[in-house]
Length: 89
Image 1 (cartoon, rainbow, N blue to C red):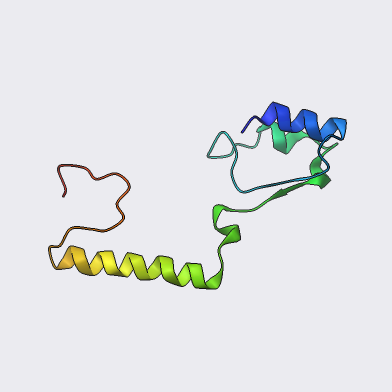
Image 2: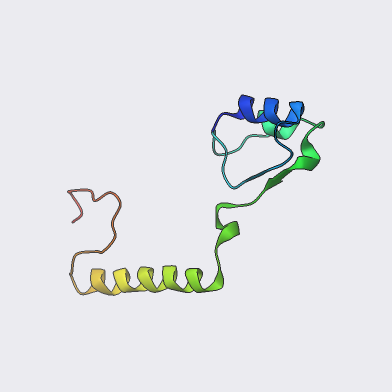
């Protein structure tokens, strides 16, 4: 995401609003450019990454976590691993 382009689009009226669950620099600092723009503050909506998760997707996600914990305790390979350190698995 390009913060400067988003600010310009909101300031010029090319974009009326923006809803974001992440920013280009995280963790977000108090001096982040999008947080210090009073002219567009009422047209920005920030949610945490989990903001769009439904109850059913939350349950499915935790079911996958528990499944992997059981597999780990049984000595089985984990499922859906994003990065697998060679030293651990």
